[in-house]
Each structure stands twice: as C-alpha cells, then as structure tokens.
Length: 458
Ligand code: SF4
Ligand code: SF4
Image 1 (cartoon, rainbow, N blue to C red):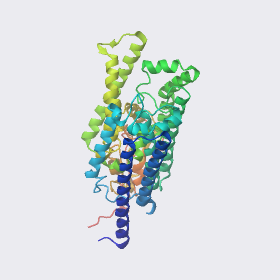
Image 2 (image 1 turned 90 degrees about the vertical axis):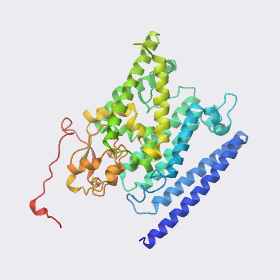
Image 3 (image 1 turned 180 degrees about the horizontal axis):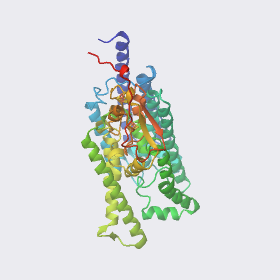
Image 4 (image 1 turned 45 degrees about the vertical axis):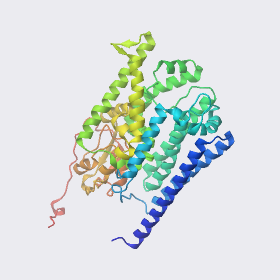
C-alpha cells in the first residue's frame, strides 16, 4: 500500500516525466526544421544557443524533480523495473539512437551535413559556434566535443544532486566537469584558433593511440617550443606523472577524476551503472579482452615507431599502417564509441573502461601490484544488503569482500567510491595505505566477536 506522500510524489514524477517528453519532442521537431532550412550565421547561432539552453533546462528541471526535493541519500526505488534503467523499451530505443549517432559520426559524417563546400544540417548548425572558438567551420568532432562536454556538465549537476550527501562524490564530479570543459574542450579549441597543434593535455598514450603516429610526432616537432613542450609533457605523463599518481592514489586519479570517458560514464551513465555483469564469466572475459587490447596497442605502437624511424612499412610480416588503421577502426571507434557509449542502457556505463581500455589495463596492473590504494572493509558491520555490488559499475562483487572483512584490491576498480556512498552501514572506505602492498590481496581480517554477543534467534 502506498502512503499519501508516496502517491503525491509518484504523481508529480509522472507529471514531470510527461512534461519532459513533450518538451523533448518539441525540441526534436525544432531541431529537424533547423537542419532542413537555411539560416544566416547569426540566426543559426541564436537558434543553437536556444536549443542547447532548452535541453539544459529540461535536464536540470528533471534532475531537480528526481532528487532535490527528497531527503539526502541513495534512492534505490525502481532501478530494475524502470523502462529506461531496467533494459525496457526506452532503454532499447535510447541504445539504438546512441549507436546510430556514433555510426553516423565516425563513418558517415556527410549525412550529418559535413561538407568541404560548406556544412549543412546538424554540423552546419554548429558553424557559428566553431567560428567563435577557432575561426573555422565546424567539424564532426567539434559537434561531438560540444555535446559531450554539455552532457558531462548537465548530468554532472544531476549526479551532484543525487550524491550530495557524499563529499568524495561532489569533489570528483567537479573535477571531471573541470577537466572535460577546460582541458578537453576549451583549451584545444583555442589552441587551434592560435594555429597551434590540437592537444588535450590530460589525454595520454595508449588511450591517445595516435600519440606516436608519424604525422603527430612531426606536427609537434615542427610547432616550435610549444610543440616540444607538448611532446615532452605527453612522455612525462606516460612515464612519470601517471606512475607516481597511480602509486599514491590508485587508478582512480585518472579513471574517476580526470578521464573524459570515465567522466561521461560517471555522469550521463550513472543511471545504468547497476547493469554491469557481475558474473565470473564476465570477469574472465574482462581479463582476456582488456589485456589483449593492451598487447595489440603496444604491438601497433612499436610497429608505427619502427616504420617512422626506418621508412619500412612491415615489421615481422605485419603491415604497420594497416594494423594502425584497423586498430583505429575497431578499438578507437567501434569499441570505445559505438559499443562503449551506445550500449550504456543495455550493458552498463563502463563497458569500454572494463573490457577495452588499454590505459585502464596499464593502470590496473600498477594498482594491483604497486599502489597504496585499497578499499578497506569492516566486515562486522556488513548487513549483506548488496547495495555495493549492485552499484559497482565495474562488476566487482564488493559484498563478497565485505562479508569476509577483506581489503578490496582489484585491477579493475576505478575508485569511483559509489560502493562506499551507497553502503548504509559505513563498511567501506577508500584509502591510500602503505605498509602491506605485497600481502594485502590475500590477507583476511579476523573479526573478533565475544561469545556473549552471539545470540541465536529462532
Ligand atoms: S569497487 Fe567500489 S570504488 Fe571500485 S569500481 Fe566498484 S563501486 Fe567503484
Ligand atoms: S558492505 Fe555495505 S552495501 Fe555492501 S553488502 Fe555490506 S552493508 Fe550492504
């Protein structure tokens, strides 16, 4: 039986959902009209700003309805039964729309309006904004970057409302919003305006798989001091900064505080985090796949560098340029984009990070064997509710560790801290210890319970 306040709440939710659907359909129709018609640059700019503002207001209004008026803390109601969050019809529709968008973006941008003789359609619509930032017409990547950044900001606001009881979540959400907006979007666009090479200072090899490509190395080496700085910075990130930070804080410093893929997964993908597969089969697949991708990315990079240095296109019978081309197509586009984001509503938000990202693989190896980061568990307090396992986006059965009082040191853990945020008993703590790196993965904590404290209930 629903009480009175629950009835009012669900009525207000249904009403707001209905309003949001209507407004979204309206904006969709407007978008269609804008894309088909021809406007002056000024009118296009005004329409684009109005459209993006409209979408932003819808998401903020909806987030407020969902979380702001309710008490702080996690609300689990309906995640498995909702049509969007429980792999229902809405989830499939969203999955298909996202997947189609990525396919068009990567392989058929001309359908979105990209043209060397003047953009039209959706891409043309972004021309004035692109001119403002970098004095060039929009590319499909500019459109993507704008929408990507906006999604992280807007769903980041939703995330902050939802997890406002947890300081760790607030700080890292502000961090991913900052790094995406400043480092991945604004700075590279302004650098293009100044005729400098495009560079995302927080992105590094092997996630940035073109870093060692001959055209990229040449571009940096011919861009003067700033180019050399970018090259040295990129190498320092790979060999110095990343290992030190991962030793100190685990892979979370990157995967949950800085990375754009992680940023989108944590914010726009938050509603789907519980969909991650927790089975042993998935864990095995994860280990085979992610280390295979890492191996291929290393072979591909060695091949590309070898060809750059010697001018020979084959190494051990492998055509290095073909390998690079196929890596970009299968891993860089299909896996990270189409499957990685397109399948959020069906497979969870971290499919790419868990099964495919070679960067996550490297950081994970270091996290497991040479890092101070671990999640400590106070097993005596665990009530076996399973919230932690349910919401672990990396498919880790956190509860099993908690019940044994065992520290969690898993290569795949991105340190998002959601398991700790949703635990009703304060069992889990993310810590940077130092003393027990060699033994902690197998060590069990002993739980001492006095005989008096034990009572068998019938
Ligand atoms: S174990 Fe906890 S901190 Fe690690 S990925 Fe899962 S939910 Fe995030
Ligand atoms: S650790 Fe916390 S969230 Fe996980 S099962 Fe135990 S009480 Fe529940």
